[in-house]
Length: 97
Image (cartoon, rainbow, N blue to C red; front, side, top):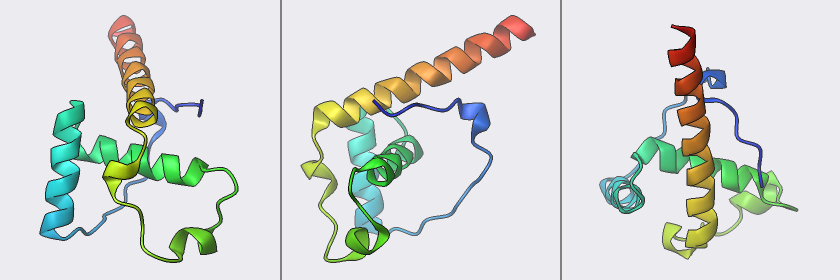
């Protein structure tokens, strides 16, 4: 499984533009999974960046697969790992304060 960084390690922010339909699809899927849209988007980006054998040119050719075609168990596993890392970071913060 991909190593999950602590939320505090994330210091870079980007802005991404979506159509209304894309944002509604992202938000709806995130709600189904019990996470926010930015958490789901970050997880999907990390999943895409971590895909074995993929290159930038290969990733930009053709149209992307709809979000529903990602294996739900893999996505849920990565979201769970992200949530665990976030909870651990929060627990460390509480212990320090």
